[in-house]
Image (cartoon, rainbow, N blue to C red; front, top):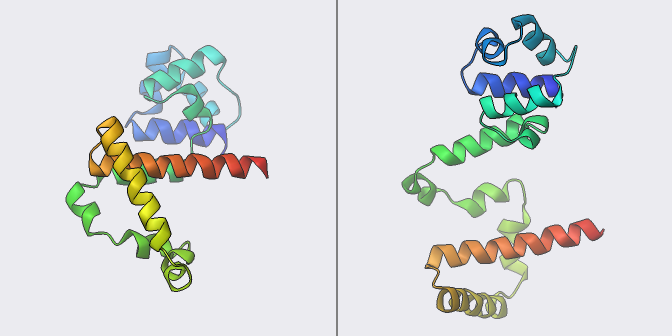
Length: 152
């Protein structure tokens, strides 16, 4: 996504007009318009002020991804009651079919025992509840995945 789109989307998410942003930054509305149209770029100081105004980090502003932001907003809006009703395997299985087919091929017994032991250790050694232990283990697996991906 272009920086101009990032600036526009971040401003829009905060419910601000170009005039309001211009007033807060001490620039003209036309300057905001040019930034959002990728005609000119804000300097680093103005970029930092924009990030603060839009309640994002400078890095998030530069790398703003509307799709990711929309997914995050949906997660934030979802209650525990709603998320507990979702069949996550089926939902993710549409994108990653292996999630709905692996059980036909893989004997999960050994994996289940090992994973249960790891969950129990996280609960006993660190005092995590069941869900938190599961999330920590999931995050550890994700880190391993990303490390392996970087090596390729």
